[in-house]
Length: 312
Image (cartoon, rainbow, N blue to C red):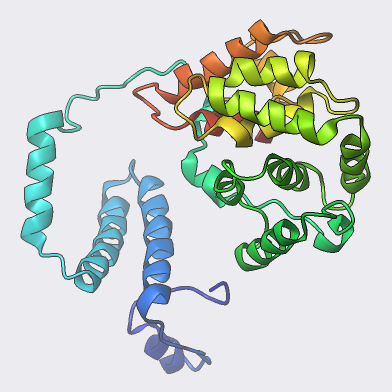
């Protein structure tokens, strides 16, 4: 729904009365919900821009109220329900009367992101370029292709849903997600798989991460089951998808060059700026992400920290 926007009911008539053409269609169901959500964001932004001007603010709040009323009507929500919910929140958490400002140590460059941004991320890939790379795992390639076509790209949640499955297929999906659409990803991934004992080592890396957490996964990846050509940047992508949804803490995250560079700017000393990154450095980064994610002024998830660092 990008061919226009939701307007008040009489706007098309007003446009026509002025002698201009108005092409109108009427949306319903989920399309109407999406249109109202977009309109609420639009009107709320305009109200926020008018807070210093009382008269302008009254007009903008009227628009916000109208959109909220439409949403309430659509969901059959009575005004008293909202009043009661507001009273409960005021009784338990207070209001916004005193100007209480909860200070956060999280950099603004990170705090502007949320789990919604991570969930909405779609990584583009070209399935046909990866056909040979998925040899022996054709059904995984077909599943990933079908998902990406339906979702508009590869979503993290789709790969997370395969975290408990075949380790090599998880590796292949993580690599397809990690490389750019037209770069050397397929060739690099095939080279990793051709290394001596690669599939067994991938299985050991995934199992260590699943069973014992990020530190164990790191040691398997870069020490005990190291695979030629499979380094920290792409190896931690596998750790992330293998272990993020387990109960282990801290949760594994991607640590590539972009994330590392952002850490130098926003949290210097977390990992070395150059040279070897050790297990203790990686865990320090993961602990920082867990700490920031649990900040009362933010309350997001650790991979939102990684997303923000990468987006930089």
